[in-house]
Image (cartoon, rainbow, N blue to C red; front, side, top):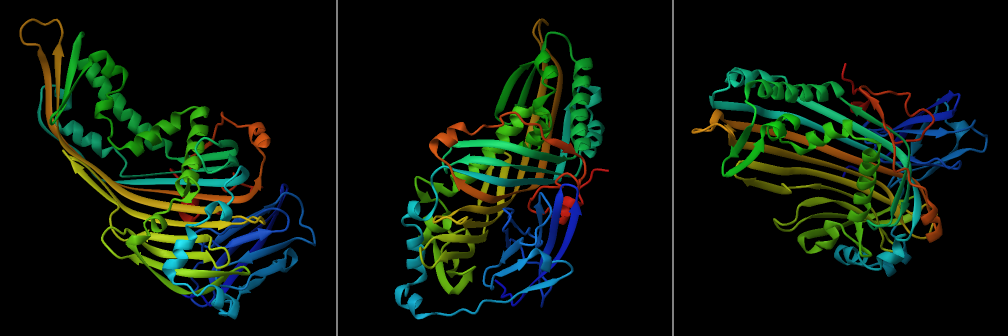
Length: 502
């Protein structure tokens, strides 16, 4: 990890009818590199984290007061407290914190990196707020895919419309690249279990290419119309792909728009369904995603993180002491010590309570490779960054998480479609198509969650918390800078801002 000597913030204030807004970007003053995921707190109850490009935005619902101030922190630097009035047209610097190995720390914590990691796994219930709480959150989900191969080689077809030229032209209409983003703001009440989760959505937007989605629908409609015109009444189809075979009635194929020949990639199918799903489906999807995040980190009062639960697979190195705000922190670097260790990165541990408060890691080898009977799947990339915060309480709570996953899927299989008729005497076979399908996709998904604040709630308060359950997200075919006016969110990156289908 590069040592950063100085952080530079560029601030601007924007004033609107709904209140006032502060925008900024965090840069290294020496290298001009962007500094991501810095913590920005305010005394008027609005908090945020800078995005991966170092940019952030804070909203105040009413006019700024002379007493309003910000607290800016960056791991390894002196914190900066300043009044809002100092921000206009100002260049603000964060200086690195001197690392002092004072006698108290040295005498009490003369431990190896392995011993520190072991202690992070102990007494989790005393270190983290595992009870019921209500959290204000912002969730951003992004997905992109690129076709590496999409074709079908026809060996035989007795349906004239289904010749090789038809399939070649059909697959050329499939967009080579596709992207979507979903952003949600709301309140989540619950603990770290799957059962105790309640969600109230306040605002959400889908940035999706509905033109591409319509294109996929038109492909299905075209295939369906050809089948409808070409095949006989009372016919049924036998679909075969290698050793697999299934029987489907003609009417069922027409009604389902030939699902067996639709694009094989699950994520793309989910994307199309998401664009058509009803309000209940959108709510359920966001709730499931948030539940998945919390239940994946702590289970049965234990941290469920690979580099901690499988510590025997890693080497740990104590890099130094640093500071997070006024808190002394151990900086530990870890690398695999065998082929079974999959990640490398850094963790930061509270030197007083031995709580894990920040973790960053990337994979060093493929996480999963699967290939069987022409189906293949490879998860080849995973990058994770997470932070815990005390939110002015004694115990820690999740404050920030971003996960990026890269994977490839493929199908290389023979396919055979035979039309047979139930009531034709003698030879029942009417039409036949034989060929091979070749599909390969390179995909990437990312999830970013920011918890702006968290407060403890009683069991009664949790039971009285009203869930949304029905929610309709706004639909956009291009990034709309006005959609989140008046709301504090994590700033979109340049890719999202440039998103358009025009």
